[in-house]
Length: 192
Image (cartoon, rainbow, N blue to C red; front, side, top):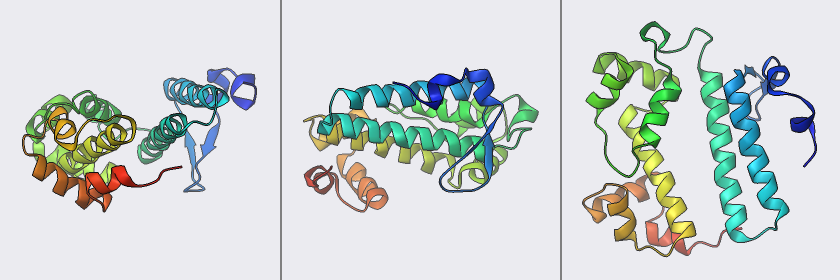
């Protein structure tokens, strides 16, 4: 693969603002995020070079969503950071959530991990993301459920249990609320 991503080292690339498609506000990326974005982009590009199979396209689509989320978080965080006063970065909270998608977390656990009170954490998180912490966490779970529905033959019940939902009916209602379709309808959609 060749292109602008190859021609510059991450230090040079991180010093320049990046414009996102949804805004004309430049986003200055720290070096670790630049490396992460570059690696994800290269992974997707390399996969598509192997062919445009449905699984490759779905996987690259998920990578694109992840890239967009990283850019959005970088754009939403002021340079002094949402949680800088408590030595915590919102991306750490999101990473904490993502590491626990196949289990459960409580608001109290998230606030403790961020080392702030529950009300303060909830307010700051919502200011940064537009969602309450638990709503954001549930949306991450549903996004992972979509991947399982797209890429596996697991039943809706198996997926719901895998993601920590004890009640598959609650999972299905939540899925429909967020996605606008039931898990079965989503799985039956033609993609690509």
